Image (tube, rainbow, N blue to C red; front, side):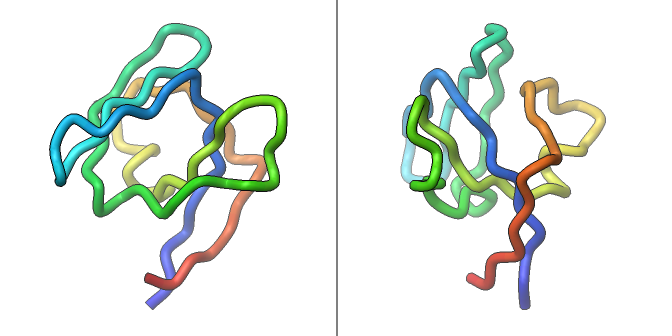
Length: 77
């Protein structure tokens, strides 16, 4: 099964437990992201850190983390 993911540029991505990350975007928005929805770092981005995060989680109504849907990738886990 493949998961639709967006590359999200972040100011910081901090693990706060084995099952959760705290992400902070450059506009100051923050979100707690389940580790199961993070698919690794996007190594193609050079000027800042970017992470592959599942699209369905980012598009939830209660998620206010700044992101763009321009860079998309289907990832199998």
